[in-house]
Image 1: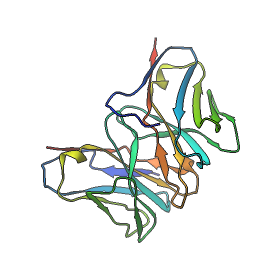
Image 2: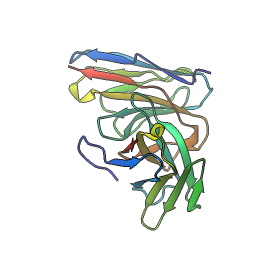
Image 3: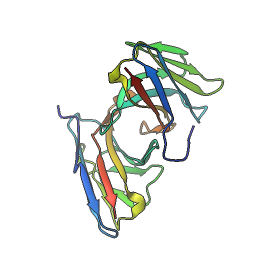
Image 4: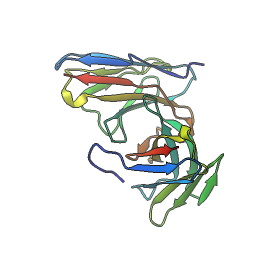
Length: 113
Length: 113
């Protein structure tokens, strides 16, 4: 969900460990969800997506889990690497036309060597 | 393909000045969007367009205007700049009714003093 203030939630992990980033979404009618990665000074990049008729989807080193009952989304990154350090956003697709997305506040992932 | 190109990358405006943020895409995407990103916050939708000649307001349209005279270009106009418009602005485009079609530009960092 939304948070106020200037400081992003931060997750610090050791290199090689698994990371879990969580997101609470707002609209129970949303049927499509995406995780984006944003490195410093760059625009967001697509990581993985999932439709509401699925509970889990796996990509390369990443897994997204969807719990519609509690409106919760999580991103799991296996064997976290220094290059994974970034801000991660979840996004949900709004209803209506135009393919509009609502973005979460984001989580800063820091990978420690 | 260049993808989504935004200019300028950085700009400092004085209160009350006006400017246009440029955005162009070469992927023949129908949908285009403008988002703003404040420190520690998620992206907020300003305006979007589903095709040439069609624009619509997003979540935070006040103080901005857009036009879409061609498929490629989607400029964002700031009239009478205010300190509250200090932000990073991202343009994005999409060609399908799925979020994985979102391609983001690298952003414009705007400071209003």
